Image: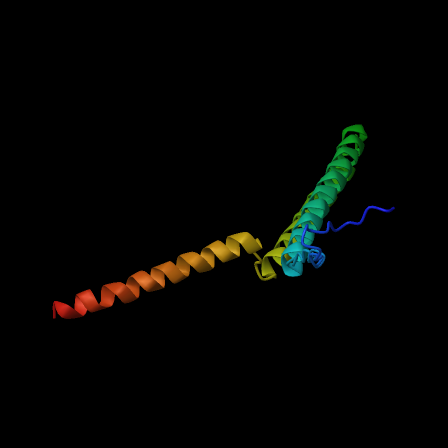
Length: 138
């Protein structure tokens, strides 16, 4: 009554069912966390520099506004000196952020790193191949 999945050949024997194929293997993606961490740090440095620049611009605008409204020469001189001191402090902060970033070890993109390693291997092979030719001439 029910149709079977396997058909019976005319000679009366049944064909064995094909075994089920194994499930596909999961794809494993290895992520280079050191590269990701370096990119995050670089982004943090850029964000910090931008934040510092905005704060410095606001401070400078406020200082200029106060300085322009001041008529007393002695007070103007003091405000000018304070402004110059603040500018030096801001520049030192910016430089400190940059120096901290530069002090960290460089991490390159995994694909770039692999390409560099391949190039180094090719250069080493070329150097090794060139050595016997140089030695024959001696």
